[in-house]
Length: 104
View 1: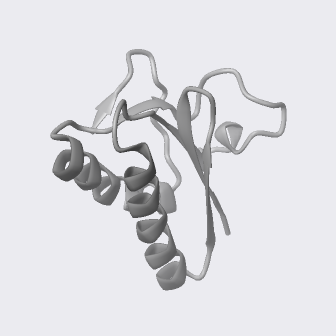
View 2: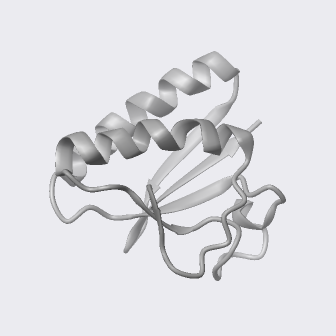
């Protein structure tokens, strides 16, 4: 797992739990590590989950290939963890990143 330079890394515990699994998806499918492009930083809407402390949202660099497969595998991981933790995760494809957030 890599952090884009300047990222303020302060993920909520339920975000932190899923990141190793997501990193493994990128490594196994793309032979590269996932890149976190935003966590508790960046420019987002005023009420963004990124701004909560700890951050309840994380942005990941879009993969250059196998995007649909990567999204399916990430959603599967999120569904598994959501059931275990009794919470909800949201996965969104934005213009230049994948956005994941947790709602307790």
